[in-house]
Length: 497
Image (cartoon, rainbow, N blue to C red; front, side, top):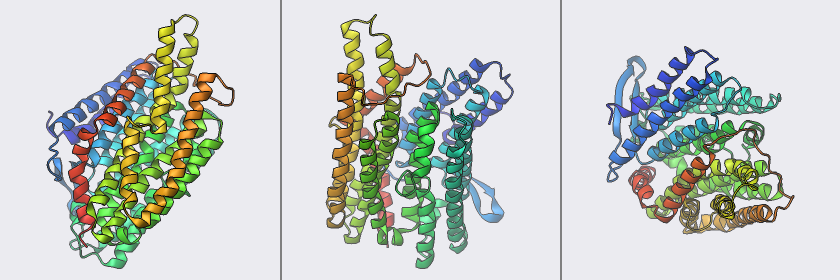
């Protein structure tokens, strides 16, 4: 493995951006090839991290820690644990998929792939950062890059999606920045080191509560949950396919990642006191998004609302932290394990759904020239994609949802939320079984917009994602082995009050 693998993960997109800036815009093939090589190298490093990761401990691994701005106690701290490693793996995979489906990008490819690498830098840095100043710096890069992606690569001339997102992004960043200033000024000595903040029991309770709500509101503003979902629905429905993939599979996860990484361990007292707020938001989101998905005939809108439904399930898993009020740590661990699994599984499933129209188009185009066996293979793959989304047993999506419900079900207060949420699960399952029926019977009820792009990589992407989802659905032990120790440690921190 390379020396300082985490810093290398961050330097690679910077290096790629510098090279692309000096390439003539009339040579798009070189630009996209450089972007693919950069992200491919990140995937290789991530695989090495997965292999070398010590699953028996919760301590940070492969740490890069250097003094940065000594006058303000700001350090450059990167680290890997069981919570952020799956998100790093998901991010590198989705970024590579985004580049593959953008291979025929004709609309200003130099700008597009530069922004993709900037998005890469922002989201990987956000997942790796263990200094609050570094965290919010990468968050700023990510939010601004996402704004430009939506602005410049939305096919229509409507500027409202970008402005809508920008409004929510600014509010989110301001809340998180204010929360950072509150806790850094009240720690003794003043620090931005996230690990030190985890171990700071002297933060006054009123400042804990204020900081908790500042961070919580900030992260919820960029999370597709009710009532903060308007920007997401508007942006995803109108933007281009590659940006849809980034928004649904990656960007939608950073709010809950921030809650797990910062909000819960830094503010343990209010996290236990106000956790039912997240439970209520979860159940409202599950019901709302499932009903919306069932009501729409546009497949694109169904995917958008399905994304919010998946985030609601993960939030329900996080609400199992309520069990710590009675010291039932095992239940809380189960729910948080489920929440992380839910975020990762939905990140794998959503690109499949977004690529489904292209698979259908390929099947229709080849229908006359293909054999019965080839047509059957296409139909089988389409059915697998939709069954994955429906949460059928045998897929990773089912296992993740099961853990979330299992954690929340064992506490009386959240058990009621589970019963209500199951209504949404049933509605979503009916929605996707109805889609299967429409596709097989060739009903005209379903409106599927075919994307105007051709990619020979589509089937490779789809089959690869299905293999990962089915493998982890049948044998989730490798995934649970990575996250379990770190989740136990997170629960111990929140419970140490």
